[in-house]
Amino acid sequence: MNSAKDWLCVCAAFLLGMPIALPAQEGDRDSGSNSLRECMAGLENHWTSQTEQKCPRALADLGKDLGADPHVIATLLNNLAVIACARGKYADAEAFSRRAIAVLEEAHDRDDSDLANFLNNLAASYYNQGKFLDAEKPYRRALAIRERLLGPDHPLVAQSLNNLGALYATFTDERAEPLYRRALLIHERASGPESLPVAGTLNNLAVLYLQQRKHAQAEPLLRRALEALEKQIGPDHSRVATALHNLGLAYRSRRMYADAAQYTQRALATRRNVFGHQHPLVALTLNLLGEIRHAQGAYTEAEALYKEALTIEEKSLGLDHPSTAHTMMNYALLLRQTKRKPQARALEAQARMILSMKARENPANWTVDLSDFGGPRK
Image (cartoon, rainbow, N blue to C red; front, side, top):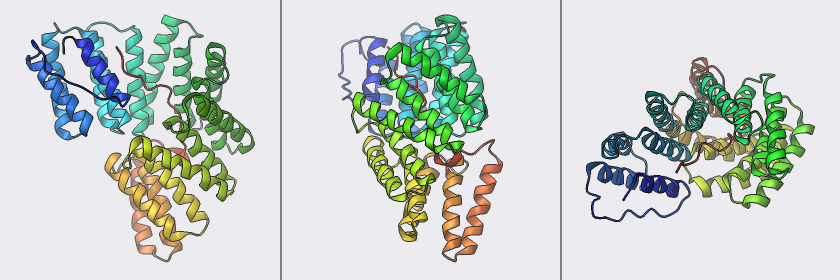
């Protein structure tokens, strides 16, 4: 690679699923470029503990070679955070985002548009780990910086409003709806009523209504979001899967199980196609489909779905995540109903212990759309 910008393009290419070519070039024998090439090759194939250890060292070496340009190094760190998040490695995303923020703050760039972006990504990594209380401060800082630099009606301000609303909705906090409505108004004015940002905010407002049991208000918003998403990005996108998942959840809440299963199965197929079979979002949809089959009395199928979801969550999220506990509670209920009470009691006790250590559980399998997790920066 001839420049740091080449490495930014590598990060972007990886995130977008494009081939990553790393040709050997003259003058590219420095330790930073070589070690970062090894790091990125590891990312392209699979994320391992060795990769996690090599990336920070590679960036440190590259920083020396580039004259330690803080914006370049921070941007590389942010791009690695984006990649980690896309792979469901939320703890790694948190670590990279923290380092990116520290680099900028050490350079005394405390009111920088990139800093707001990195803060947004840090908060999203907290949210995805179930660290909801930790997410509020970086979301609010990102919003304050964007309002100060860009004005109150900028689309990036709306992004921050949407994300902060999603956080407050986790607590069924009354502050969520006004934030969503303000974000929706900004996005509609900026990009039109069928744009992707509008669809994401509609999804989240619908999720809030589902939490409040306002099903009649939620369903048309989800249908509008799904129609806009399929029109803009096609049927096989992760954001389409989010809308499908939530429509499945809406129908399950209304005990319309056949419709719920139809949308949930579509969401599961899309998420598996996009993320593979071991991603936390795949587990979330498996758990929802398990709930639907459970309610239909298909206990054998429901148990297999719960087990698969739990295996993925324990591996990808850990035993202390609220989503893991939610699946445990569902499976424990099935065990009770199939006269396996000792196993049910053990699983319930484990789930309660997890939830007692967390501020809040991810409510009832909702999937929010955290607007544009930073994206690779060039």
